[in-house]
Amino acid sequence: MEKVAVVTGTSSGIGFETSLALAREGYFTYATMRDTTKSNKIKEITQKENLKISILELDVDDEKSVKSAIVQILDQKQRIDVLVNNAGWGLWGCVEDVSVDEFKEQFETNFFSIIRLIQEVAPTMRKQSSGTIVNVSSVVGRIGFPASPAYISSKFALEGLSESMRFEFAPFGVDVIIIEPGVIKTNFMKNMKMAKKSELDTVYKDITTKVVSGVKMMAEMGTPPKEVANTIVKAIKDKKPLPRYIVGNDASMFLEAKKSKTDIEFENYLKKELYGE
Ligand SMILES: NC(=O)c1ccc[n+]([C@@H]2O[C@H](COP(=O)([O-])OP(=O)(O)OC[C@H]3O[C@@H](n4cnc5c(N)ncnc54)[C@H](OP(=O)(O)O)[C@@H]3O)[C@@H](O)[C@H]2O)c1
Image 1 (cartoon, rainbow, N blue to C red):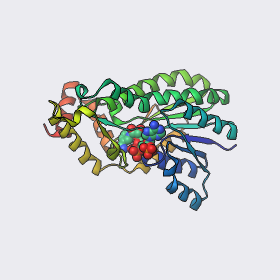
Image 2: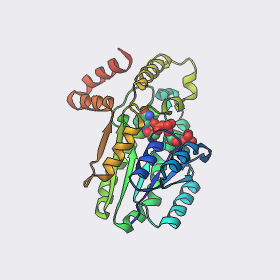
Image 3: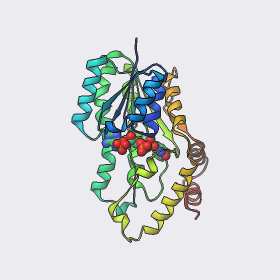
Image 4: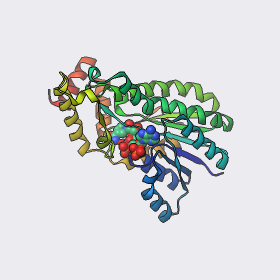
């Protein structure tokens, strides 16, 4: 039986590579993106390698778009075996500089959209008694630091959601996997937005500037997105998928340090690593 995968946010980076990796594994893959004019490169590779990839418009922030895409997929294939919730973006700015509306906008894409997709897809997976939901979180889904609380808390929320869902879906044969990449070399840093107030000369200007430049420096040595894609494929193929898969030496290093240090020791370690204090 042909297995079907759906990936969100495939115009670039991790989503792009994951769609290709899944198709190369034999999945009929729906590479979804909100702007399908960005699909030229994936179409070119699809043709060259004779892969089974279908490009579909899907804006994860838009309920109608999500429903319409999933209905089309189910009309065509009657099943969904893998859902990769990958679409996401990041917002810079310390908590006092980020409006509640800006927090909501960040959560809309990185958190609420995932609930939206899961609610559309899970009934089919339950009926099949099989399926895998992959949520692309981040190392910052378990580590907080300054200047990006909206992004970081959206990923913490995703981790909590994913942990809960593992229990709920397990009796129906549906696995839930969290992927925790460190810094990955994609368009992500370039696409990060700055909260409006953070552009001004606020009391948080200094710390925001320090963290942004520290993270940007780390990004230059980032892990290639193919490694995340390969980890996702491996995780899906595992007989008993683990709750979490970490990608990148930086992510492993930070998470190991968090495990081995007290909270206060870890805060001091992070300050040094991120902005040399
Ligand atoms: N790069 C990193 O260092 C890193 C580390 C840890 C976790 N992650 C996570 O990995 C995921 C993918 O990021 P990436 O690194 O591959 O960055 P990227 O190259 O910027 O890709 C992000 C993708 O998400 C899409 N997207 C954003 N908002 C969307 C919406 N409303 N509907 C549909 N698609 C939307 C973008 O589409 P457009 O082209 O239309 O904007 C793009 O395809 C994100 O969830 C991110 O939080 C990244």
